[in-house]
Image (cartoon, rainbow, N blue to C red; front, side, top):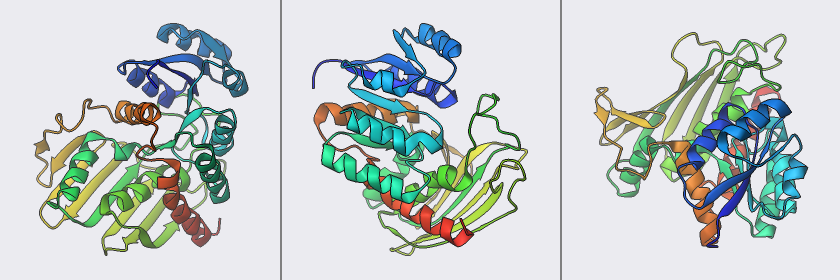
Length: 318
């Protein structure tokens, strides 16, 4: 595929904007359709990014013959059904994390993706952040082996607001959304499947209907362990912070930045063509389309993560 890849993006919220900013830096890709819930706001964003087609219905974008691929940045509860709709329309698709919040829906997506031969990718961004890529390169080179990962995923979200401080139309989830990043990354970095997983959670929020605090333990087949703490109650630094404790070094990853165990910054600027994990994720999606191959973080490759999340949900009584 040598012609420009024409893209529809669904969900013009905080994360959709991150994708639009990343795509601006990628040659041979054009966003031609923008889908979001509020038409007037969507028109404003489309005008800013030079996007010609605006709609509130994904089906309108899927009906456009010129659209080759779709990026879904919509609410979690829509992800699996919308991914299926894209594949059924013959479009390559990248769905933001999580792939699903019910395992059987994710398995249905994986089955259709395999049958279709289309590129179907899930936005497990941690695989693409330069910080985590640096660690991965050292692992694959045999220079570093994980003994333990200690991960903190902390937000202050006692009301239903997004990353821009705007009201959300849907409810986020510590297990199916935020834990998905770490469960997948742990197995990916260890090069070994998760064979044991435990979870406990705090009280259910009276209006949001979700647990606001959670703790997860993981063990891989090669005996590495992971401890993950998650909270929507944390009034302090926000985000996810990873500590890799290994046989030759300790690394601390904060999104695209990396430090050693003594908090000395490590230069990761040469790891990839960009320091932006979202842009690198999108570059992989479009490269896979052009090269006719499956991408890193294909739906098939991340499905084991969702099987672990399902097991944890059963433990929690979900």
